[in-house]
Length: 388
Image (cartoon, rainbow, N blue to C red; front, side, top):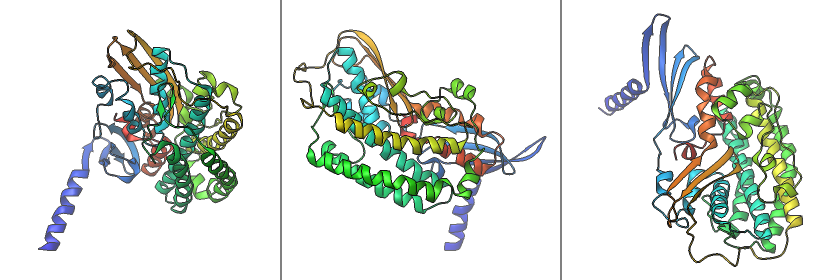
């Protein structure tokens, strides 16, 4: 009886997830990747039509984790909404945190002390490294390599320990405030951070030796998912996905905010626009984030970490504002319309993962199923950001 019950469950799973359709060109297979499949890294469903091992059509299906973040922004006060940002993209929460507080500061004309600006740069770039490390380890795990994710998480744990000192959190950070940050960084934070940066710089060559030159990895990434610049523009792709195709667009460089214009860093780009270039860009960006953090630590000024002349209540005048920052996955944008009340009249979030996912259906068409998994991983999707 137990065997029959188990067989029945397997049979039901098969009929729910695999369907053969008959067309004039022959038989095709409909396969559901997700919403629980590990390659989707979250509750994303991709319906794939296969002709043998080749993808004829791929259709992302969203909505499994939709939490109405934008609508929540219209029923909470400006201050109450702050914790929501850490839940949109939990891997680079500080990037979203910054985009929102930056929009409100721009709307209300709030000045941010110089020390707070440098602290934001330091912590946001450290969070960017943490995000890229998780992508690096998980992507390689998708492609069949288990060891790298252990190294990635070992370094990521050290970053989380450091950020926890000042944020009080390990993942869904809510550290930035209108007019600065919630707590100053101390000598312990700085000394631990410098020690980590020295150790991490020594690890990067080992990462390249262990992974980047591996022929199995290169076979799964080189000339796979070649993304033309024209397709990037049609879908609004940004971040490492766009830079992997050779376009050196980075909000920190081309739409400077905070003190990034005082810091020296490169914008890594690819040449072929394939999955390997997107891999190389993200690894190079971790090196650039280390450069940025070291410069910011060296230039860190004295002074307040929070504007001492903030209003008692955050009620902006009627108007609208758009503010963008460079997140780990691309351009994060926050658009706010104020009607002069304590709550936003309208709040719109620009999610880079949504635009980057949108091109997957076209990019994966005609590829092998295994290559489609590699392409999806190379986009570095965070599903809660897409399904906000």
